[in-house]
Image 1 (cartoon, each protein chain N blue to C red):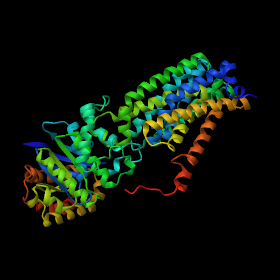
Image 2: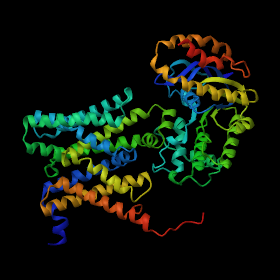
Image 3: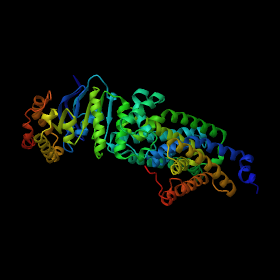
Length: 290
Length: 286
């Protein structure tokens, strides 16, 4: 097998492979930075909870119109936002902390979603919604992902400084502006639309993988926020490409293959990254004189 | 002329008062130390002035400026030092009021940040990541941010907790400088010696005000001892506060006129004898 056959042919010969790659790469552009902020705000598991929470919305869309992209996307977006806002409100007005109320709401949401899918669909449909089919991305889905990423990048650029302030020194932000609470909610909305963008390709459960794993891996290499975001995007893109290749050549499911490659990059970064295990323990204890 | 007027202010958490019927004012351009034992309501008072805590009773009146004009330095713990930011990022937050959330930090702003860092003895620290700073260095950087904020009113909550002597001396110097510029400064402090040396005004709190006025008359050994006793007495009292809600009205009524008379204008050195009786008489009433 030539190098061309190994690395390029699958994407040149098959439209579905090319579209899958395009979808995953475009998604990486915003999922990477969103993941970095999730991680730095210590909300990694919030992303996971939100991923479960969008299920009933997607399922409702599926009930109404089968596996069509727009209804499922809108449904997922609505469900995610409702859960985010409700858990925010409950934590604000009751003694329950946000992580607890989020856990409560996403579990309710997940159960509702599975029940909705089972009302009409088969196990295959449920698997499709839960784990996605990156190889079935049609042009509509690509356009949707493109739109979501465009909106996300513009929003991230606008929210950048308030977001940084909210992470770094929330008390200070509260003292100079009332932006803290709205920024938090807008950020959760960004998380939700990126998960919704990813679930068509990767499914609701794995969409968060393309967000968190590259961000967590990037942290083992670089220090600054900007570099972390850039590297997270790069790792996402590489994972998408390698994952799809693995999926094609070994005939395994594409979504899990992409996330497993990202997982492998995470483990390697953790071990061998410039700020990883090996380097921080084996490096000679060099230091400057002052 | 007063900058901040406190009118019969009660602040607390879950209905438990931490600041109880406080009356008085911080004059414009004054430099006041807030002293008192742990749990006496010092930090709570600052949060109340900032509007971060809604009063259970009374109010805070800001005269001639808004809440956003206050530079507030909370206790160190609230900053996420693992966040990948450099000292310049931390300082740049100080421009929020002037530049807003979106517009860029300009060349002149960078000059100003450099000058502020030089003023606190951190020249050349712009690109240092905040996780590499010592406690003293971080506090210096935060004082530089207050400089950048250029606020007419500055609230400092225990700025010298766990800070080395040299840093305390340098930053106290900066506070004195702010006072000289006519800014109103309120700082929560623990070191009576430092307060005597550098803070003209003192508010001695023990949930209720023990004394408020010129430091020499307010911050006496006798007053400090009374403050300690007050807080201990309050703690003893705490359990039934929780069980009996009806008493609140009576209790408030009993003591209202006392405070009004004694603290209405807040000069130091008045007779505070009734405070001795407070816990005992309250217990008697109920």
